[in-house]
Image (cartoon, rainbow over all chains, first blue to last red; front, side):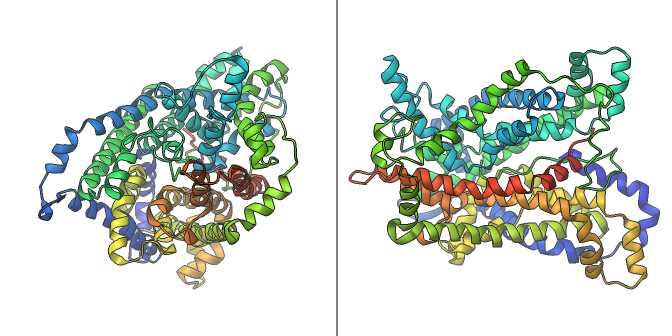
Length: 309
Length: 312
């Protein structure tokens, strides 16, 4: 998060002389407790996973050292690639759609042209407060072909739409994610729009700019930083996709397999088939992929920012 | 998507406002307040409808008995009004295990999220207001941690905890909840913005200890930021699913999310009795506390959000 590290640099250069004499260990009194727990629940499991990924459980001989064997197996494992492809599909279709809707709503709220905008903001944000499990259950009931709403509508119109079929399942899951996170992303964009200086609008109005021109020339460029951040968090979330398909697995048992997403695969590998080393290798690869893609998006976001400023 | 972090602040470069002080409302475009438009309201209303439609469905179906749930149209009321009966049944089914799940969830929130906020406030403040050896290293590692999928760590954490013998106990859920790298980052930004270093110097001159300065001078200034971080950390913990799913086997330690899913799965087990009316009423009871809390505290978190938001 480069946006995050900037303040250190700027702060330090501006305050070096004043602060130098205060450089001592006292800060650890405050940071120490967090750092200690962080070591236990973040660094230790990471190191443990790295070690674990070099071992494999064999029917004969128990746990044996296999070096990078797990990684090589993983790269040749079609189940892994199929799962990864599914989350990538969600990523390139669902994430842009969700962020576009979120941005539309944020701009609509910010335009001041909506009746009852406070009601709009709170209602659209509300799904974010609903646990993924409840969201997936509710939508699952609605999708149901037996006594769900889709089933009832099918009966009424004489259609046979099945949102749990292999053709539709990614759309069905993407819909749950979109529903949950539109409001959250809308709030990120909206808070950012609220920080635009009013004098900028006044100047634009004096220059005779239309509402549309203000959106294109002032508001959307201003949102670049938030869009980059919202994109990064969506990428992280999508690569971790687990809860929605996991809850819906019972509703679409033959479609949502035990390797439907990389995360579901890792879960089943370690808890159902005892291949912890292999699961650890998968988790590490997914972590690396996420970090790299998040980093690339952030670099791109920054470059465009520099370009416009 | 277990622990989605709170909306993002980046560095405020322009703001000279103290955190949490709402900007004067009238200031903006006071000369030419835009006309409200019904057409535009209705177009945007499509998304409003999309957002609240499943919740309306939930409310309607919470009034139905299991019998009505499977036999009547989803968006109309059933033959009977079983709303109160469902509430009673949710709390009495299986010797009142739902109450146990509710209390478990509360415990995970109070101890886990509460501890996470406490550590994040202390840590963020320490990073913002002190220069100490290793500070930059801590900062970089924690920022990197935000991008690491928490799920990547869940399985190794489980195996580690299994060695320590604490899986299937509340500790297995509480300890990993104690670390909120994103909360720490938010508190870092809030501390930078709203606690003037001069004030701390003055307190030190008067001979106040570091902790006394923190509790008496800084903490009140950080209050709106703390409310914001608390609300989003509480939401993440209240709604957590993946972590307790991995860590807990004994249903007596389940939080609401896992318990509800277990109730739902009864419908799919051969010979199981479907209790979808309980799943729906239980879901309703699960979501209401968070919604009420956010509505009651909206002034604080909205101020906190705009104070910490991206200002390019």
